[in-house]
Amino acid sequence: MEHKKLSILFIDDNSDHIQILSRAFEKADPSITLSYFRDGEGAMNAFTSWKDLTYPDLIFLDLNLPGRDGKDILKFLKQSERFRQIPVIVLSSSDRMEDVRNAYQLGANTFMSKSIVFGDFFAIVTSVYEYWSTIALLPS
Image 1 (cartoon, helix red, strand yellow):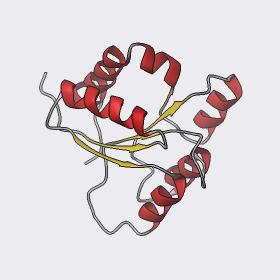
Image 2 (cartoon, rainbow, N blue to C red):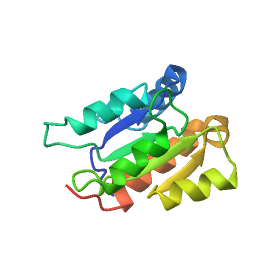
Image 3 (cartoon, rainbow, N blue to C red):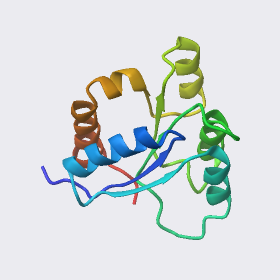
Image 4 (cartoon, rainbow, N blue to C red):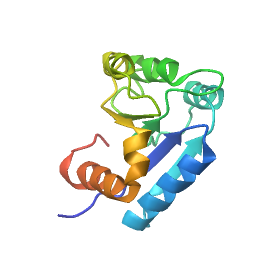
């Protein structure tokens, strides 16, 4: 199967996590476009003033962010006419069932625990990449 070139946005305050995920995605496909925000305020400011007509294909969102937390961002994205179609993968240090349920209720497309992801991050990132770039159809 042919891979779709993906544009991925990370919203995470942990620069080590962003770096690890970025390297894994770049190893899976060097043509991937990666961008990031390190706090909720910066992400929200960018979303509310977004002038570019190209949106990311996927958003990886940490729930525990300084300033505006990931739940606020997820709620905003899924209630927004402009952004609701973008799949949001919640990547959290929490694996509490309450957080999982809450994320899905707010519109998350996937919830992944960082402990699982970083335990075998390359295999997981490869699986995520394969799914979103070859199997899933994404809006253009």
